[in-house]
Length: 396
Image (cartoon, rainbow, N blue to C red; front, side, top):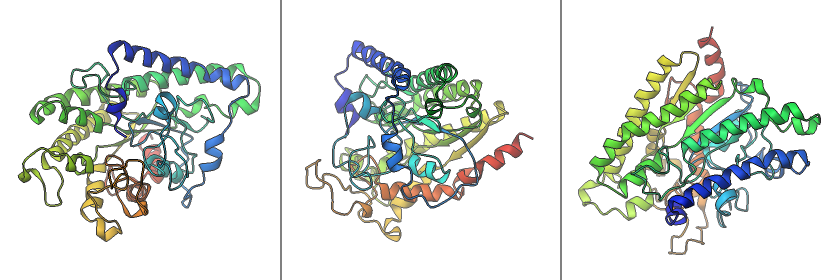
């Protein structure tokens, strides 16, 4: 599903109304809780999927910010449900995720022995004791009115996600202090957990997507420093609000996504040795270089924080370039819509890396998540399951 098809026709007033509606939705959470209407419909059914590893870390919660690579239901709750066959592999029904099953963030939560994250804007079936997900499919780091975006992407941009988190934190604290019922309190975050939680990011792909489809690549490069600075500003504001542990994914090889490979209007000599669009991947690499430099800079500036930068680009490119070695087929193809029918999936999604031309399958997400665990592609080289012990030593 292409996000720009959903929001292309939003006008400036449409954006304002949309964001306003989000605030109305989120303000209803305390009302639902007080009335005893919130249940744990999704998490109770899904928290134990693939659970194999007991983490040595004891992060009490995860707060995630990002796009469709980690959206667990925000866009589905606000703009309309994701339709079948999305969710067919594990959930057996659409779960608000843009995949056939679980996402990388789901597997990371499992590795830390935490429940799957509920989308903050989804007030039905939510339990926020162990974190919340602010990621929204199609969103960008840049604000919605950025010239580069031309108002064709999701208005729930990173700055809006930060605003949501700040509202979430205040409303949850007020409600926690107001109510007496332990049943309600057990569904809300504890104030002392914010400084001990893990803050995860997977965002930036749509900023590059917007640039690639609206301007020349050299022009896109000129926007990257501004985009990175906007990202860093959000991180710093979170840090000022007690966040201390940041797990940051760089962006993947956008030039290897089937939709870009298939629709590549550039000369044949713009493909690399495995068939990916070379210039698009070079943009992603430039973005990642500047992101890594900025993370290193913030590591020095925000000395009470811990930063782990994860090289998702190299991990995903390795998977695509060596797909046959890992049991996958047609690495630049996709499972959904092979015969032109976007409502029809392949019979064997576990053999494909890409689900719908943009998003990865559950099988690929699991492979990537497993690769992350040993920390060999992170800086510093820390697996997520041991990050807390290193963080503790860094603060002695």
